[in-house]
Length: 246
Image (cartoon, rainbow, N blue to C red):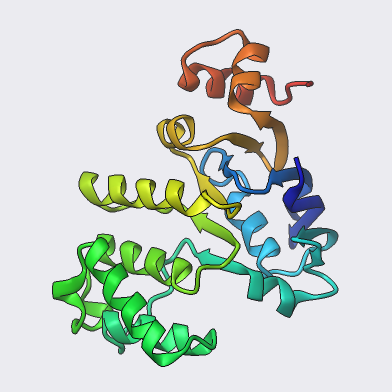
């Protein structure tokens, strides 16, 4: 299957610390793909290199044929990003945050306002549309950040912990929207440490531990290779063994 995202040896140091160590994996087009690992494994650093916030010390990432090293603006145009820290402007209201971002993306005024109304309603934020960003709860900020990522309907989404800090019903709605979003050939990458979410939502997975990829492929293949049926046990065994050869 054709890859939407090709990660080719991405490497990043922070001083003496090797945070991401020559990471390679492909994300098939039209899939929901999990990027799974313990806290501090290198997930967020890898995503930030893919969407151009961090420059890699080595390697490259290619998004729909565009190199992040050579064509960073083109790559950013193709992506919708939900960062780890939500990235909500504190002095803009929930509605203003989305309108501002949509205008930056060049969305037409009428289409933009209709899309904003729809997303605020679907995510249970309609009554909070006039509330300033710094007055929103953590869960509301997460939902608003997700709405911002999908606002302009980009072909590839990068979501960093998309359901962290939200209530059960909101998390369920976000997961449903993620699955629907991938229909029609669009691609979603979810960085998470939530094994339950990966097992139920994702078509494939790359597992990172201590800055290295220890598995990349379909979840069923990972279960077969480890000899475990319960995904939690699969993950624990994989991390302990460090690398599974496919």
